[in-house]
Length: 68
Picture 1 (spheres, one colour):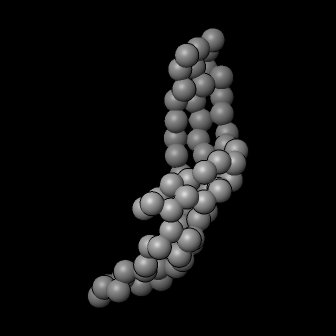
Picture 2 (tube, helix red, strand yellow):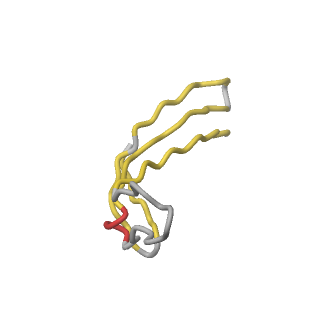
Picture 3 (cartoon, rainbow, N blue to C red):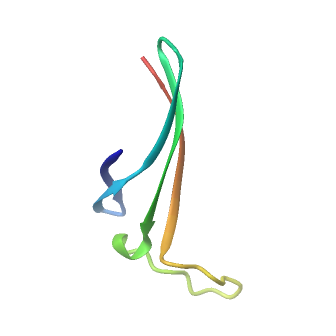
């Protein structure tokens, strides 16, 4: 699913990989994930002692339930 993702006053088009299951006549549950870049949203990589291997890519994972 492709749509606009707003983070910190910056909007970019992002495509989420979605899996959904029809639970009953009124309920769908599922999950979605996408990888975005911190730099696309003006989010810097923390410069703190003990923080290692923090990259520009961030995985966003969502679990959802939709009801009518």
